Amino acid sequence: MRILFSFLTLSLFVTVAYAVDTEDALDDPVLQARYEKIVGEVRCLKCQNQTIKDSNAFLAGDLRREIRHMLEDGLTDEQIFDFLVERYGDFALYKPRASGKTLILWIAPALFLLGGAFVLVNIVRRRMTLPIDDDSAAKD
Amino acid sequence: MWKYSVPVVLFALLILMFVKGLDPERDVNALPSPFLGKPAPEFELPSLTDPSKTVSNADFGNEMSLVNVWATWCVGCRQEHQFLLQLAESGSIRMFGLNWRDNRVEAQRWLQDLGNPYIDTAYDEDGRAGINWGVYGAPETFLVAADGTVLYKHLGPLNRSLWEKHFVPRLESAGKTQ
Image 1 (tube, rainbow over the protein chains, first blue to last red):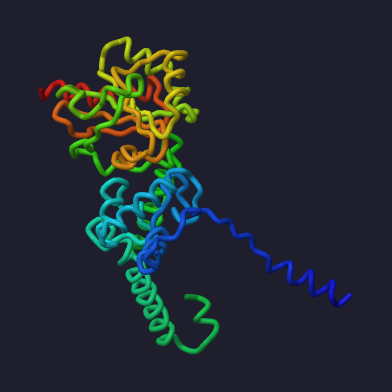
Image 2 (cartoon, helix red, strand yellow):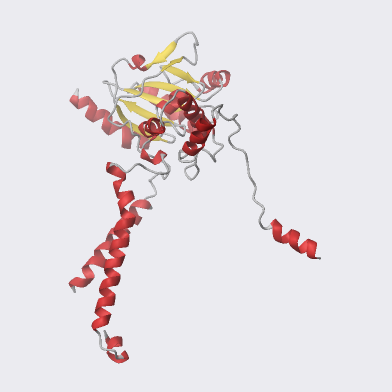
């Protein structure tokens, strides 16, 4: 019984791992590490909620092949991202670069946090000036 | 009274954004092409119909041209094919095909069976030219101006009403400036 129970419990933690990228690893482990980092940050445009690392769409495979070639040709990560943005726009990158059009994406969270803090401080300040009297507080 | 103006305006903006987002004509997968207003990417590929010939930007011949990305595995391409034939027949625009990630024999048979609206079709077997053009889902149709700049890109199957809505005004305004 206990064995069955532990088996059932463990089965809740099963995940399925598919090997999408079936190409051989690059010879140079440093390049391979860069390759894995880059493909994890590039959006598959055909299947827009996946990275090209996770997608088995043929476009993702083609892009992985191009990135592999560019790494072997000695291009920097920045040059590879430039290549993709030139062709597919900023949307191709999961981590858009902080520049011009995408600046709002980067500063919006800070703006919302500041705005929220401002509202909170104002509410707390106003409540502090209220008399400690449930009736009058309820009327406000 | 005025203290409510800020939330009211913010709410109105939010509603506007939702209305725009729910527009049934909006294609959620469509991305603006980064090539709009820029020179069309260079390509040089073997012709689909005659492998000894090549097709390149030079074939556009400094005239307004349409570049249609298609493949035999693409359902939307079959949908729009009839309209492309009509368009080619009307003679209103020079049309080129970019056969993307396809099988040459099947693609040739497609043109024989369904008709060939293209002046010539470039055969992009490994998808590299497609990537250079920022193609991510066939069918895609690029409108290239006489000077070689990309004026418009349409994602998805074309039909007459889409053509009249998105392409005709651009053809007309380009015609006036020439």
